[in-house]
Image (cartoon, rainbow, N blue to C red; front, side, top):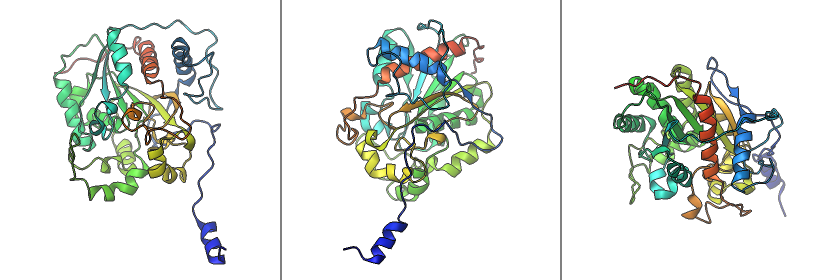
Length: 353
């Protein structure tokens, strides 16, 4: 039988907030930064069409993979036809934290990249240090970009995943000459503002930062420190982003049943006390770049929407309801289709040495 003291402790224990899938979209940003352009109806139309074409969904029921929130405007009544144009852009994918530690399973949109290359697109994935901080990886991005011949006639797009977005943003700020080559940055489940997990575990991680294993070097030990919210929010407030770059954001969150077991066991409950709409690593309102075009919020966890981690860790990266893998190839194709429409009307950035 519980004692009165035990009941008192239970009554005072932190309670998880209720998950509400109908709440409107929201962002967290420092005062004074540019606002958000809402393009969710347009992106939904493109994404749902790709899902139907691939046989993943029927009609326009895409809520299984893309949240349809209460404040979503209806899609355009007559959508213009969209088609792929392989020579329209060059695409560089920026991987997230620990990406190199899980081999090919850490490559963002791997199957989608293969499909785009078959269609004739120029797509490359940058090789960054999975356990290093943003300053280190920004230098790596600059180093890799110097190897790519400038092409002022073809837009260059960075698609960042998770901490890869922070690495890309730091690159744009620290290397302005090279940044002139970049026309757009897309954040997918990006830790733009950092994560409360970074605040909580940065000290703990530093105690083990020197440990390394096969294929998972220790880097500079600043991986988690780079993900603290004060650091990232302060950086966004004090360093205006380059205005010649166009920014796009695609967030992600899902309920606990559809979150990977490992994320649920390690992190999800901590995040849920602050905001139930999280992807197991970040809060949904921390995933949007200031001044960006909001494409929507994916209905999936932080891993599943971008990387095929279930193939390496089927139990821990799987969820309790056994839902199928997220249609990452269709998602990447939809992003490319959207960008082709939005970048075609802009003048490509000038090439830089």
